[in-house]
Every structure is written in structure tokens, then in C-alpha cells.
Length: 248
Image 1 (cartoon, one colour):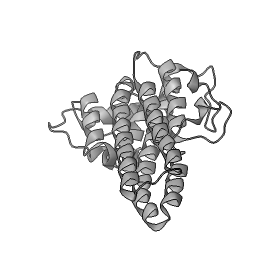
Image 2 (cartoon, helix red, strand yellow):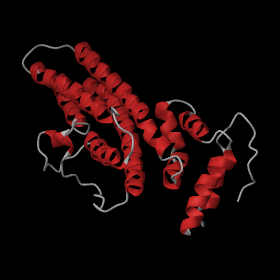
Image 3 (tube, one colour):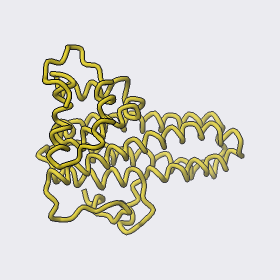
Image 4 (cartoon, helix red, strand yellow):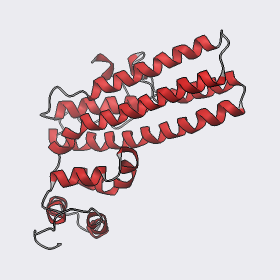
């Protein structure tokens, strides 16, 4: 997809970066971008009802329209535009991830483009609303339907993105990110989503997950912060008892 070739105000990885490192970094940036997208969507959902009620209807529509720009893929229209969005960020790092991964025929980019097209359709309707009589209920219904679609598509993206997490399941940096951001991800994806994901990666329990995290950081000489991770690992509930070696 050509729209991926854009200049964005985010970290660019060196061209000689080893694929496993590029995969690890891009996964973490994508996870953060998804968390940010869910937060933005919640803000938009709240403001749709709040601002349109408080403002003149047309002013409220203009306000929501401006907020929607934070979701759009500006790189499709202008590859040198610095006014980036959450979808730009997800696309940018998804392309890097696809290049660094052995996984093929994944739909992450297709889902993001569909999300963009759905937003553009509603923005096109906003232009027509300026020239015609439209009621608050019509506007409200259109916006809420769009937000429901975006929420569904973000969850679809996570589903399509999950195989990359499995591929990186022994990457200590990815595992730490999932463990530390479990509450944020679960609040948007469903109760114990991260817990169940980690259980599928490490069916033997806490010891297996702990070993994957600790061995990686110990090998690199980073061990001082690991004690703070222990309670987060212990908070994950496995249905079967762990029979692996005790904690480090």
C-alpha cells in the first residue's frame, strides 16, 4: 500500500536494524497507538453528546469534525504532512512490523484503511449538513454509529495483530509491555484479554512467563527493576497450578 510511505514525527528505525529488534519496537509502538486510539474514541463519544448539546448544532458538528482528524490517515493525501494521526502511527509501524515478521497475508493494513474510509464517508456527510436542515438526532445517530464501527474495527485490528504477539512471545520487552499495560488493554478488549493471551503463550503458568522475561533481561544485564514486575506477573491467574521452578 503506497500510503504507508510517509514522513511522520515518530522514531524511525535504522535501516540496518535486525528484524527481531525492529519487530519488538514496532509491536510496542503499535500497542501504545492502539491504547491512544481507544482513549481518543472514548473522548469523541463523550464530546459528541456533550458539545452538540451545548453548542449551536453546526458548531458542534464542526467541533467533532476537527476531533475526527486525529484518526485520519493524512499521509494518503500528503506524504510530507506533519499533522499526523493515530491511524498514521498504526500504519507506519504496522508496515515496519510486516517487513520484520515472517507472518504473511495479514489484514492489519486493510482494517486501518477501512476505518479511514468510514471516517471520510461521515466527514463528507458533515459537509452536506451545512447546506441542509438536519436534526440533532440524525447527527447523533450518525456519529454514534461511526464510533461503534471504529471501536469494532480497533478490536478487529487487535485480533489480526495477535499472531505478531505470538511470534514475539519470547521477547522480554513485548512481554513486559503487555504485563505493565494489562489493565489499559483489558479495559478496551475485554476482561482478562491480556491474561488469556499470556496463558495461551505460557500454559505452564507464572514460572514459564517469569523465565521468559527474566532470562532476557538477565542476559542483557538489566535486573534492578525486575522486582517491581513480580506482583504484576503474580496477578495473572492461571487455572492450573504452576510446576516450574520457583521465582528467581
